[in-house]
Length: 396
Image 1: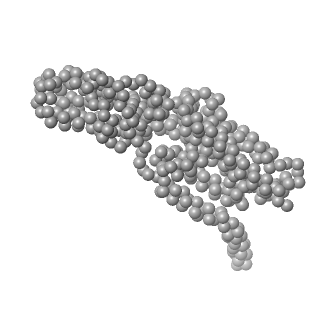
Image 2 (image 1 turned 60 degrees about the vertical axis):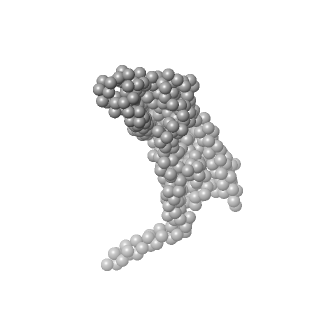
Image 3 (image 1 turned 135 degrees about the vertical axis):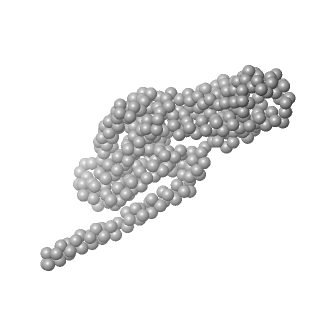
């Protein structure tokens, strides 16, 4: 009986120690409770649920006889497409599509009336430049809606003109195939992207960016917090070592570790999951280095404001949770309002996903500002970490 009593006493003592340890760090408890709710509140505040309208230009050849009124086509297209212009030829449009200034180019047939006389459907060519399989399906859905709207408009005008419509076309109503009468036009979607990957191949680079950020943030944050809590930083105060040297050594070490993990992951993506590599591997290596440096800077900034390993882990997990919600990993950033979008751009993984996907699946990236943003995140977070660590090492 005394043995059981002593065991109960030991268990109660250990339980009390854990409770006291948690209560001694109210910041960790508060961040654990409020952090997820703040992220969910940001998500609820910022997510509109509306897909960004696709920037669209329509090519209407003069020989087609079709209207050239932008407002008319916008009415037919609905809210999914934003008609930015109606032009007579496709000059410069392929380059605008490749650079991302345009999302969709719709090319009307040269002479739809002649096709109707011959009992044939007219073809509206819909050109897109998309590697996201979900976006590809969305563009096809919008093209189908536009085709249906155009057909309804043609049939409405035919009904208004009555028999004269058929007579003007120079044919008898019975000579025209029923499918052509029902659908005078059809849309053909042409994706000019270098590759059209499946879901696994498309999300593989995004998973790589997310893994690299989370590993870098967590490992370096725990490393610095552990050194502070175990007294190693106290030894640095009396040694000929300054804060910048400590940070530089950690950065180089974890960039090498992260680089090895990234190289292994890229090899798995290519040779196991068959994700294409269309760009220069050296450029991909540079992007990965930027993502790692920015993520390591974020981890160091977390470390200098954390008072324990437990809180560092909690903050790292909150960064991971925010990254899943706001980085474009699941939902497009364009579906958030500008305030939350600015928060998303402060995460290294947001830019890492876009750039790594572009290099691997497109061969290049036109979003040059993302490189500068990664460098800015790196500079700001490293300065915060250096300033906080220098103050900590200077304390008596």
